[in-house]
Length: 263
Figure (tube, helix red, strand yellow):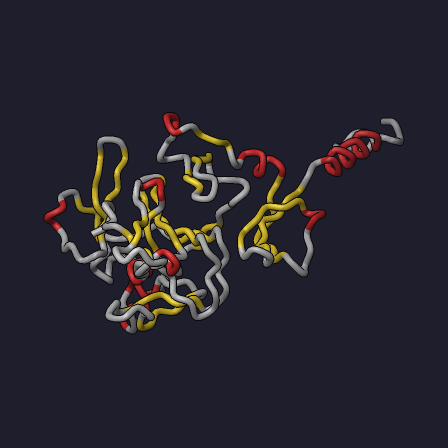
């Protein structure tokens, strides 16, 4: 064996070439950009501790996979997500406005005797208390800053196929996938999760989240920075066909039309 050869690895020249290839590969990070309060994808060499907070590393292959624009006629509900800012569908989501999903908390068995299941699924980022909206009951309040792009869900509940099989009390979402449709009824706090406590806004300025459907499930996405002690308030995204309309008095305050996907 040649004295320059390294057993199992080959020649040093090969190692040098591999190292050079590694240097040429770009690396990225998913970060919170404090300047606009939103998640962003940046090259690692652009990271600045003064304006960025790291969430996770991303490979060049992962970033290249993101942000494939999908025409409306080619949209696949199981693969694509609508970007409200770009007003386009992307697979799997928009590269300019990335998403990051926060999982539900997993309750321990011994906790079930102290609190109802849905409240125990609440991530540590939030707390459940009296809503800031009059007569709205309980609401979800942020305990830390929540940036644009955070995603929560899916919304959990009992799967129902007929509209008359559940209470129309604002806890059921309609899921549509082609010709198929069913409802997710979250009215039972023992069989739902913490998303059932998020209220709807009284007007457009209050809204800081949208609901969207993907893979036959409902998720909530942050569309405005949510400050500490601010309440989470959700409405449906434009991909649902919903819209906000001017109030009757013509003032700045707007109110949403009835959401055709929630009861």
